[in-house]
Image (tube, rainbow, N blue to C red; front, side, top):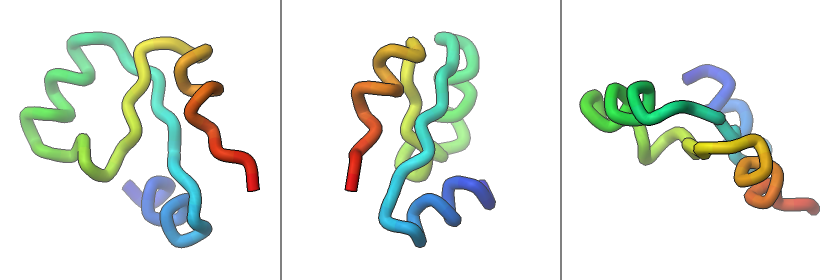
Amino acid sequence: MQLAKQAQNANGTLQIVTNARVTQTVKLVRLEKFLSLQTTVDAALENIQTP
C-alpha cells in the first residue's frame, strides 16, 4: 500500500500483475480501487502512462 500511495502522490499508478486467486483476495478486502491489477505483464506495460 505504501508503494501505491507513493505512485499516486507522483501522479502515477502502480501496475500489479496477479493471478485470479490474488485478484479475488484483493477484491474481497476492497483494495482494488487503490491498486491497478493486471493479468499479464503486457497488460501492465500497456497501462503505464508516460509523462
